[in-house]
Amino acid sequence: MRIKNLLFLGLAFFLLGNGVAKAQVDCETDYSLYREYIKQWEQAKYNPKNINPQMITSWRNIFLNCPDFRQNTYLDGVKIMTYAFIRTTKDEALKDKYVDTLVMIYDKRAQYFPNGKNGSQVGNIMGRKGLDLLTWAPQRYEEAYNALKQAIDMDGNNSNYAFVDSYFNAVITMVKNGKLEESTILDEYSRLMEIVDFNIKRYTEAANEKLLNNFNATKGNLDVAVQPYANCEDLVRIYQPKFNANPNDAELLTKIAEVLEKRGCDNTELYLAVAVNLHKINPSPESAYLIGKKYLADKDYTQATNYLQQATKSENTDWAHQSYIYLAQIMNMNKNYELGRDYARKAYALDKTNGEPFIIIGQLYAASAKDCGSGDFYSKTAFWAAVDQFEKAKSVDPSIASKANELINAYSHYFPTVESIFFNGFEEGQEYTLDGCWIKETTKVRAAKQ
Image 1: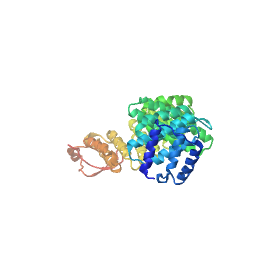
Image 2 (image 1 turned 120 degrees about the horizontal axis):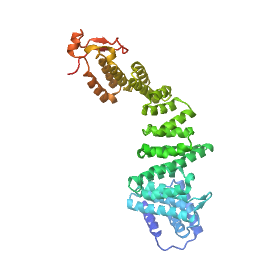
Image 3 (image 1 turned 30 degrees about the horizontal axis):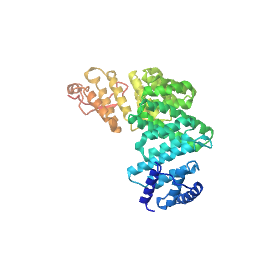
Image 4 (image 1 turned 90 degrees about the vertical axis):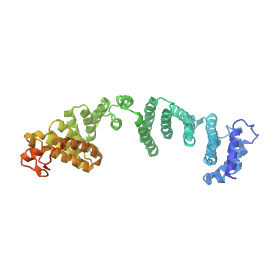
């Protein structure tokens, strides 16, 4: 039978489902007949060209006249509507009618077969209806949201991981379209994460690797989806109660610290409390890094230095590198310039694509210029070495070229004048070694820009 005739049958079924008089049928006969044909169709991998029209007719008779005869009527109905009609039409108006029928199949199943082997299955049915609505009629997102919300509300910790994931996306879509307040995203995120965490623990203990992986993936998806909507105040509101309830749960503490850091919320009191507890439970360079960052934000440089020095031993190269950067900056503020250079050089050794260490070294040189000589000439020679470092910075890291150029332009004005260079017996372009102070760099004589 041609596809267009199948579409006609589908549309006819839709109309029948909306009030056409019921035919007298033999439920057992029609059920056996359509089930035999559907088995053959399954073997053909649901190819619409392999549909026997009698399968459609007999299934329709059962659906309309024997609604409580077999639950398979509804399970098979989803397959028939999906593979025979929804997937095959390009007519959006007709497709929407087919989706109406698909929704009706789910609703009728919930009405006539609300219970399964393990009790109520209405939540599961509504969840599957919501998934199909999002798949085949995404413009009907509000219907999908309502169905998935019903599923989550009914099943709670027993919710299917796919329903949790899709429901949260539906919540976000509702917010984007002005159907829900933005705060709903964070409220539902908190609720759904409790469900996810419960199931991660459940399937870890049960050694069910498949479901454990599914819920871990869902957890990651929720974390990614919530990020654009969670500012620091919101995140503290969500995580503070969890921290208060389980202040010594290392896994939870690590999770909270990572989320707060990713969102730039490492200056909050919650972040410090989490980091300190994590360090007490399991001292490590990583936990030291988290604490050091918070003390740095609070301008407690003594404490920050202590923890960041521990953090330089981290196996996380990015964190070790950044720890050295922070230490170099602290040494600059403390006027411990030589040690600051040592830290900056160690940072560069860990990441030779990052030019920030040379920016810091240049600033260290500039800050100590007066320590390298006196008078109008010698007190300014350190600026040559500083600018050399800024040049290096942009040569290894083009991403900071703009910052480096600003510093080059600023400090070039502090070079000795042409007259000063001449009267001190030097020429532009001549090599010069700063051996009168800690810098000990060889640079070139240059005159200030006019």
